[in-house]
Structures are given as C-alpha cells and as structure tokens.
Image (cartoon, rainbow, N blue to C red; front, side):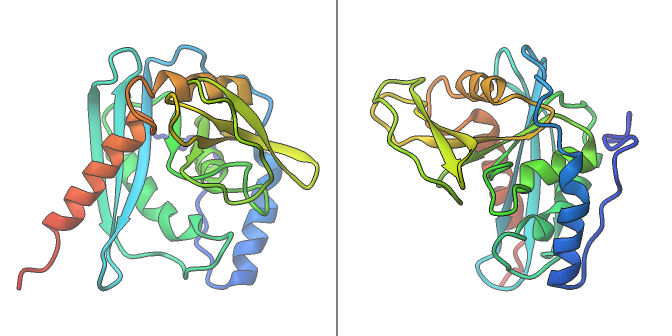
Length: 235
C-alpha cells in the first residue's frame, strides 16, 4: 500500500532464523494484541488475505483483495510472489507467509479498514495466530476465519445461519464456531487485533450472504491460485 503506509507506527516485521527466535518474537508481540477494541462496526472496505503454494517446489503467491463492504464488489487487489520465509512448524505457520502478505498489502491503492485472514487469531496454541500477527505488524483491525479448528473444544451450533457456540481452550474462550449457511458445516471465527468477538461474528455473517466462506476469502483464494498458475514454469 503506497499511501498511507499500512504499518504506520506498528512494530516492524522480524523474520526469525530458528524456532527459538520465532517463539521469542511471538512472546514479544503477543502483549501488543488488542482483544478489547470493538473495531469498525460498519467498515467501508474489508480485505481478504490468502496464500497458495505450488504443488512442486517452494513457490507461493500471496493475494489481498479489498471489497466494498456494502456490495462485496472487489475494488482493489494485489499479489506478491515468493518463497516461504520459514519452515513448516506447527504453531509458527504465520512466519512462512507474513513477508509475502505484507508485500501484497503494500501494493494496494485502497486502504482496507478490516483484515479478514484465512486462518486463526486468538484460537491458536500460543494465542498468536496469523490474524493476531498481521494485526499487530500492520496496526489494522484483523480477524481470523478458519475452515477447521486449530485448538479448542466445542459443541456444534444450531443448524440455522447465525447460530454459534463458544470455542474454548484451556478454560478460555478463544473464538466462536459459527454457522454461516443453514445446514452447512460451520467456520471458526477468532479475534486477531482491535476487534471484539461480537463484531468479528457480525462481520463474518455480513461477508457470507451466499456461501459458507466469506467473500473476502473466496476472492483472495481465487486470485492467489490464478497468480501461482500464471507464474508456473512452462514445460
């Protein structure tokens, strides 16, 4: 994003070289997560973020799509290619994707008011998933919407759209199990940064008028997959 800089006064991104360094980064940044801020209740723009990986090799494509929150039309988008910045380590997956996602965010022309990550925020073994990390290093409100749980215990919500149950881990509520379509399996919503859980739930429902997954996730997923396919080496 060229104007204004999405990160502002937020902490700079640190790419660790070892697992110990990555854990230390999480420990240092976790206290900066704002789990109270209500967040935008009527954002004008909402961004979806997703990453696709090549089946062979170590290439990836990170995509950000910015949607008009009222019409859900895409008003801006950006893609950044690269390679995973960190190894595949459970609980540290965000470090693989953050540099490319931030690169894509910096290429946007429209500043999003809310980030919707294809992943988790507080609902993470160390309470610092991708949505938390992105929110802290960008300074933007962020939420995580996972297709499957990473941690926690839960009971199925009611079958009707909008029904939810708490997602709990170690005696702490870390998110919600939310039904976005009648009779369709739920998604797992958690706070990332500067958004309340009530608001995160409302925003996800606003982004799912027709399908199980938010339109932000659907559009970003298509974009990163198309970019990865276009960049694939020709036989």
